[in-house]
Length: 246
Image (cartoon, rainbow, N blue to C red; front, side, top):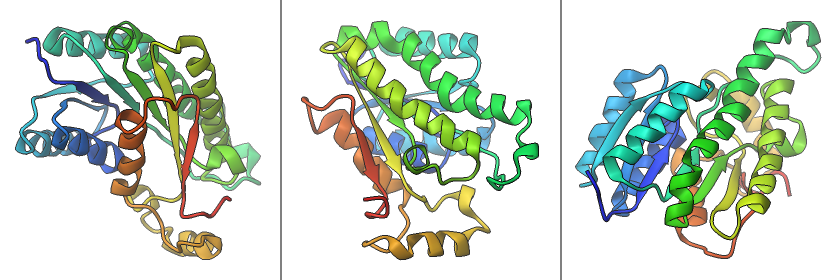
């Protein structure tokens, strides 16, 4: 069905930041494409929340590390809504490996993290660009302060987020003025990723002026701002970490 509503596609939107973004866009009147790879039950919960906000929604199963699945998802979004205004590349993965344990960083660990965090964002952006250009839309990548500081769950995770920060700038240069591309770089976020690691997070945040970890809604605030609250911002990485890295 064609729609005059603007449309947002949020990858990894079954839980956490992705869900918060999907619901926020729904409340702003956007139709929402909800993506998940593993958490089917949680994705249906997100779907219910989006529809409860009065927004049309499309639920798509796709592993963003697989280009063919991404292309099918974007094609389904285009066929359903006939437009795409915002792409939020939120899907991510990691392995928690001490930075001194280089032997634990197998090829499989590297490939899985880079495949989702970097190639996934690239595949989604590449597939979505024709629709985004037609709508003069924009991309928001969810990266991490790990890509700026080298501190994070593992070396491959930090490297993947640094690559995504740089890719944000490259894409912004390549596709402006038709499409804006920005990124949000959160610090620790209170999601299931950090369960059991609360003491480490508290120590990390001792040097943060605002003294707390982010909630998914905090990050959704920044994503929605870059997507809808500014028209002259591109190629930027907006840090949202309570001031920890300034």
